[in-house]
Length: 547
Image (cartoon, rainbow, N blue to C red; front, top):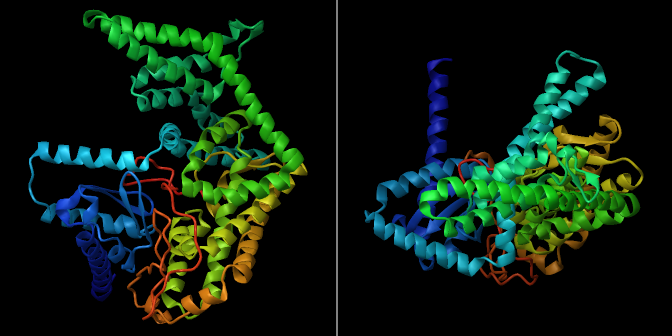
């Protein structure tokens, strides 16, 4: 590389760093300054801030920043910046906070942080959503292993079908199946950890479920099968172990605690698992699998229509987390979940709706830049930028996006009803990213073709529904105005404009970039709920949102 090329590369890198530093510097004073920041983290698309005083945040000014796609308030104050951008802005933001934050005693910071956290939880959390978060906290950490093993299983199946590498495929099968064979142990470990027990005791009790020796035990006149009850049995066993352990901690003298408590915990919870939970959980798991098969066999198109159409609202409300154990149970029973490809159609509807918005508002340069920036992530199944930056703030396009998801889900469900099952060997990815994980009861080519057809139907239905029904005449007059030139997106600034508010309270948003006489949007829209990102413990890495 020549000196001039190296200099050009350095200049571009410096320009990008300056841009991200400028974004961080613009955000910091609007959230109360460095002294108001208790914690900083990020997930796939959001900068998540722990705030000491929520009243210091200037919401309107923050949402008006071009790079900010929306704001969601949950346990933390979450600023949606989009994939890629958030990972680059966060370090700059942390550096600004570290450089400017005032010094406080550790006791003062801990007390203020605890007070803020308690206030936020009391305001935002309901018992049901707290329960769903706990379920998500148990299963979400397992997703990377599910994805990795699922892709290896798909690759192994392809090699077997092609007759290639026969000496290697048995080893690949072992690598792909080992985790699923012991998934109950990991679920038990995470469950005990989440419910306040000793994680290894939860794993020890759950391991009884997968022990081959349980085949010698008869319950209700029938022998047990290793793995019977699966992840649901492991979850129940670990919860029971936590309660037994906590009872022992209160009753057993400290001098005997180290011997008596773990022994009684494993003994009592283990026997209850063998003689009760495995049988009950096995029946429940079998019922879930049978119901999913019956539903798609007898009402596949209708079921797909409902599931694909309602998934985005479920994500907005945070209720999609309740589906994680169902997916895992189906993967454990059938080697794939038939629900995920149908639910993934919701993201296809979102993409189609965004394309229609792009076409219907040719003069709104800022909104079109937002769509161009967010569309690649949407095609790969990361839906937050399109949801919070385009469809949800506009109102009607969110509804028509759901229509697109319904038609795509109905398409995939129809083929399930005709006997062509389309499933995913893991949970997590969506959109185009789901192709490597597809599996079914027919050939891989046919399975891929049906899923691809569902995506195309979702794109087309979302586009047509939004193009013809997503805008009123007043919306077109209000939104289709000059808000920026199309050439701005090519100057290298790579800014992302927020078309409208995405509030956590359901209030009416203003138009994307108001003209001199703005007025409230006439169309209500669903309020963004908890984070659709499945990672409930935000950190430097995360998993995409499953839309």
